[in-house]
Length: 343
Image 1 (cartoon, rainbow, N blue to C red):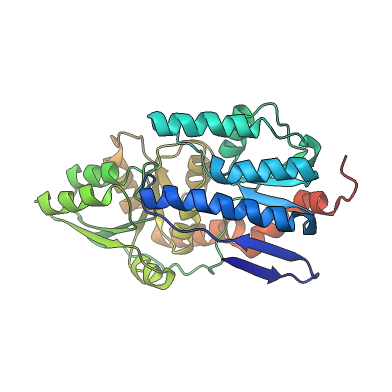
Image 2: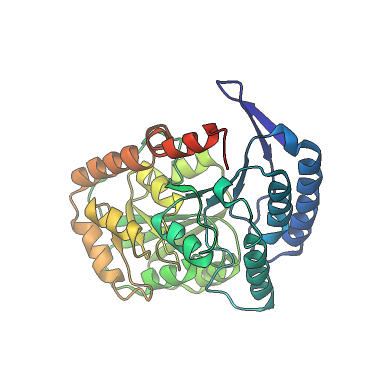
């Protein structure tokens, strides 16, 4: 399926759509990537001469191979957008080993380095990419967080005995949702905790079992996949958003999504994310073993809720609302796109 979008200056962008997935390893996803790679190759063979640039999110080898092969052949400038660490460094096994080696092999085949531009969603990911592929040396780069189109819709929170905690996103291998929920269950607190999990993936089965076994006064709600409006309705009644990522140095889009709802953030990500939420007093960075969960809960309970409302709105509007951040951050990419005499 092809989607086209005409821009204000009669430019044209072609988007090749892919499927969503809930599990990192599944026959459906593997089969789809093979067919997607073939579709991409055939499309580029027929159409590549019509385009001045190719833009690709940091990909798996199936889509990387035809892209690198043809951009090398036709000397088309390439923009690589790094949005995640792949393959995940926290996973072992033959499949991940082969993906890693094949990805490195293909990336090292990039010849037109003066025609290479790097986008990344955080300083940590840019550093990771340049460390992993030190020979590439992009002509320029920009750090541009994944933004949100929603206007700020947070509310002024009130001190109350019930604390509603939400997680929205993948239940795959990079997020330790099960671990942080267990730590909340095992914490000693006087407040009633109500946990809302929106998403699907490998941890859902274990979370269901945990919900059935929990005998404490914690209400765990598992919703599966929900659309944006449904998520907004639930988050409007929540107080805390969870970001239990296993990898440091990232700035996931769910940070912005939680801030747009005025939520206090419990994160496990060291680096820029920790600095951002702590310097702006909108969250708490946990250790990855969750020994500090009690401190985090007490920090939230004692926070000035009016000040939290002001801080989340200010940080969201300045760092995550797309209409505010992209214009400021993408000037060097515009120069790259407009530079006609690339060497």
